[in-house]
Length: 55
Image (tube, one colour):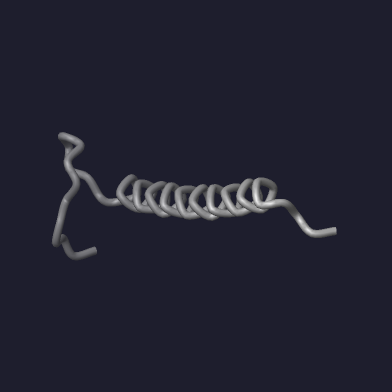
């Protein structure tokens, strides 16, 4: 049984929304991973990140 145009549009909009949400969640995961990397960086006595320091 074919879908009527309104049902088809609703399904298409749901798929578009799901794809957008998946991209947003991926961006959030990437941001969290970056924040975790920053948190693991070496810091000085004031808590500032030390850039360019040899290990």
